[in-house]
Length: 307
Length: 238
Image 1 (tube, rainbow over the protein chains, first blue to last red):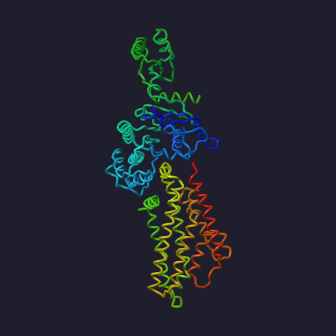
Image 2 (cartoon, chains in turn red, yellow):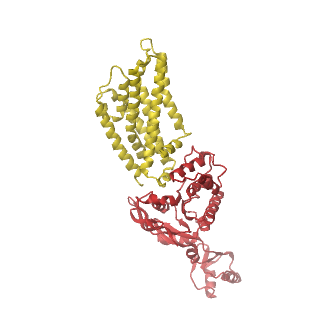
Image 3 (cartoon, chains in turn brown, cyan):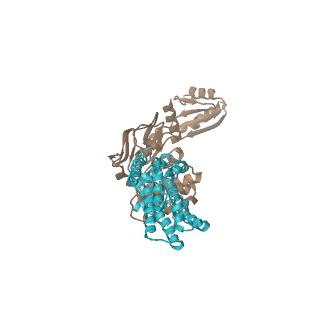
């Protein structure tokens, strides 16, 4: 499979702050790549480096298999559509007029491309409305339309759900899934909203304090992380002792303030443990199976990184 | 030319259109008002124009400062600059299109204002070929020399990236140094040269003593220096 984006030991240093530290990320054709990290982790700086908006301190960027320099970046920009943070528009102009300016800047001759892009993001009826009258969600969708206008192979969306209400977040999420599936685009999406990213992507890169902590297919990363059973009981020490004495689980049991965790993929163990605890007069307030999630994986990875 | 048209489209329906119209008509109305309210001795229309020509040049300079600051800083303040930079167009070309728009508007505005005042002169006073030549010289020299100052204004706008801040710097620079225009040392303030030259073109007596080649050389150097600075600032990846 061809590689559309690759960075090699990419570093960006601002005075004494390393915003991006030896990042090696790889986005293959057809990927919906979730680039996740907390605010200030280095996501936007990395994206700016990919688009040639910043020059790297060291390391390099490869786009569509070629090394990128200041001199050749313009050759690859027509193959990329991007939306970076809050999308900026000429507020005095309509949505369609804004897209037309971008069309001419991107050297697209086909005027119908504006209507097509507006249709994909469901803004075809408000094209003549001035952008200053658009809601935040409409602006985000118009930003995606602008990124799609010149029919790029690769779509880079930086925090596309920023500042949106829950309904707006769902709309944008569905839109991105639709663009990736129906229109066959490769998408690199950065976000700090893990739950949303998890639903959209097939590949994940986790960045923290400028360092890429993990990268791989979603199933490999999260799936390999395993499930956990959680219990809230009135006497944790006694409960753990009972489980150990009955040899129901010999692995690590993690104890927290008012609950304990058992890391296992064996779902049937949950009912056995609950039954055993009740039989031994332990009050079980809550017992549940926690499936592996990006959130848990991310938190654990970040905590490990900080240690 | 395509990108200059785009720049023109960007300022369509903004307050800038009204500001340009206001500053284009303001000197015409003021000259008319001065003619109506002047006493009999100074009633000759051309004398009024020659005596108060600084109003015309001040208006032209002010509107060009406002426009130059606006077309640069709004791209940064409205975050549209990123989308210009990720287009396959060189940054030099984008900046050149902005200078192109300034050139176009400055010349159109200058021709419109001086043209209207000349027509008023035809209607309200006497004109001859010498007066016509003076109007043409004032109009073209003013517009051309002001244009040589635009890189300085653009460099300030690119340095500040904020409309209010860069406007304050530009206007303070203009206001506090304008009294020097009537001294021998005005060459030290290159932005006063276009006003002085343009006024001299219209004046019949009490002309300022200007060394025209030196004035042009100073402005050309300022223009070149700040074009270089503007390009460096615009191409800086930060």
